[in-house]
Image 1: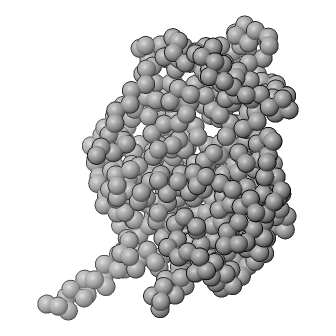
Image 2: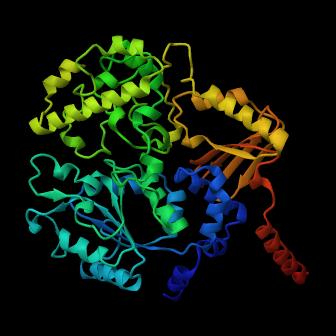
Length: 368
Length: 138
């Protein structure tokens, strides 16, 4: 117990030194942290200086209407790694899936963390909150809404992890039987960071936590409350297949010549032009690949209401006009076309959401 | 059981002959400009390759174009890191891996020596203490 308390009061620099980590090891850790936070390497000295004095923040992780995919994404990604190292240096005081304690003991841990770290702790939420009937999702007899409201009351900030917590996600999909809402629709008096994705990229989740650990503040956010460093550019604009788009070279089916040659998946329903996320650079499975590199279009999972945006394989992104001919004229001006197609997508998405279009196996057969 | 990175995944190149997606050459230009600035003004530069949207083959092509120089360093701190000077003097590759051998950072440094190679002041102070303790033992 005394050791635990001592560890809690130590700075990150002290903790690492106690574990026998050299200054070189610490600088390597800082370089990896900078890369994870999508900050330039020139920031490493500033990160080292800040991390040297950083103290372990308390983190309370609440899981509501969710599938645990976000936790799976985080814990199965790199093991052990910089992320794990970071978790050694935050105090994860409550997490349904990961904690040993259960029942009253688990709830007591949450209340103790809230009490001991009043005004300083971070609340991470995955899953949406049902408002139609509190009985749809409750923990220890406490409704999701009540647990969220009482836990965020003393928090420094809230991180909504995954599209369910950020935008309502799958539970919020039409017809939204549970009346699911996002964290941001309930929490209005605390800073809320949306780390969307179904699931989110693990390094993006830890990158946001690392930013708070390092600088004691939250990163700059976009209009949807997402960190700009990770969600500032569209998948389309960072896609390595973008040159094919600019040349008007598209895969028409999943097994044609274009697909085999790695051409743009725009016509196969890729939602890259209207999706903002870091998949193209952070990638998945230890940086091995990402959906587009694997030959599948982006689903747009980090955008609001992606589940109601029409079928994943419906060519929402293909305008009615002859795109190939048009792209031939605008080689080198792909950004403008991407923006136009994105606007068209939003319109088509809205229509699809209203009509709640579905895709059948037959539809898929027709496409492939 | 093989690790994920041990499974060879080969992606067909777009036109059958090209083995990258054209992102290596722009980085080579950036390195060229950075090296000029280092030579004339002494300005150190570091490029994080993990922040770039490389396609299959781009990283391999860039590393192949840069080649290998005279110095190769292995660093064992929180996992193994390998550092080598490329065929172009002043251009270094720093490849940081964790204890599992997974890459946590890949950087190109433009300078005389990558900064992490130098002995660090904090470690030197610690070394003095340990040396004194060792001397007391004998």
